[in-house]
Length: 316
Length: 185
Image (cartoon, rainbow over all chains, first blue to last red; front, side, top):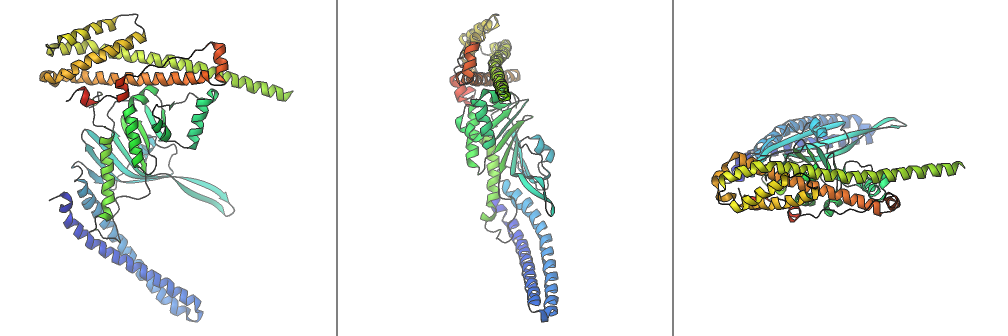
C-alpha cells in the first residue's frame, strides 16, 4: 500500500467535513444574497419598506450565522488537511519532512537573509516545512512581506500597501564554509544601467561589491553582490551558476539567492497561496491538492539539483 | 567666464575620477594576484601532513609519492614567483589526484579520520585557488577594458599602463571538481 493510498481514510473523513462547511458557506452566501434582494426591493417599492427590511434583516442574521459556523469549521478542516493530508503525502517524498503550519520564517531571519533591500512594514509567514535530503538540512515557508507608502490627498492621508515579496523562501545548509555575504538578485533596469556605467565609464565605477561573473546566461538574469570577491566565486563555481540558471528556468518569476552564515536562501515569488485546502472542490480528486505536493517535491529536489550533498570541501 | 570655469572644474573632476579609477583597477589586479599567492601558501602548508599520512599507508605508490615529495620540496623553496608557484601547483594537483584515485585500494587509509580531513581541506584549497584565479582574471579584464576604452586610454598612455594577460583556466576549473571522479567514497 502506498502512502497516498494509506491517506484515503483521512481524505474520506475530511471530505465529509469539507462538504459540511461548503454547504454552510453556500447557505450563508444565499441568505446574504436574499437579504440584499429584500432590502433593495424594500427601497425600490418604498410603500413596502418595512416588509422588505424585516425579511432582509432575518436573512442577514441567518447568513452571518451560517458563514461564521462555516469559518469555524474551515479552521478545523484546514488544520486537519495540513496535518493529515499534506504531512502524510510529504512522507512519500521523504520520511524526514515535517510541517508546522503555524510557524514560518521569522521577520528577523527574513531581514537577515538580505534577499531584499526594503524592510517590511507588515510581515507574515506560515507553513514551515523542514527536513533533510541526504546530508543537507533545509526548511521553507510561505512568506508575505509588504511595505507601506503614505500619500497626502485632498481627503487626508492615503496608506497603500505594496508587496516586497510573496512566495516561498527556501533555506538550506550550504555545503561549503564561507564567512562573508553574497547576494544574487534579479537583474532589473536600475541595476543594468548602473552596470553599464561602471563598465563603460570608469569614472562611474564605484568599485563597489558587484561581482562580475563569467557565465553570460547567469549575468543576463542576475546581478551578484558580495563583500568578498574571491569567496563569491568560491561559492558560485561555473557549475553552481549553471545549476542556478536551470533552477531559474523552472520558476515563473526570477528568483533571488543569498549566501550568509553558511546558509543558502532562495526566494521564489509565487502568485498562489499554497498548502490551503479546497473548499468548493472535492478532496477526492487529488488534482485539487496535488500542486501542493508538487511544490514540496520541487523544494526537496533543489538539494540534489544544486548538488548540496557533495561535501568534499571540509564541511560535513 | 563663469561657464568656462565651471567647464574646467567639471573636466578636472572627470579627469581625477578617471585617473583614480585606473589606479584603483591596477591595485585591484595586484591585490587579487597576491590573494592567489596566499591561497597557494595555504595549500602548500597542507603538503607535509598529507605526504606523511599517505606514506604510512600507500607503500605501493612509491613512484607517485616520490614525485609529490619532490614537488613539496620545491614548493618550500623561497624566492618562487607566483607564476612559478602556480605551475608547481598544477603539477602537485595532478600528482595528488593520482594518489587520491588509488585510495580505493587502501581501506585503512580510507577510514583514517586525519586523512579524510586532509583530503577535504586539500579539495577546498583547490576550489579556493580556482576562485582566486577567476577573481584575478575578472580584475585583469576590468583593468584592460578601462585602459583600452575611451577616455581611459588617454590616461593609460600618459601613465604608461599596458594591458595584462589573464591566467589560462585549467580544464579542472572549467569542469568544476566532481566528487565522483576525485575519489569514489
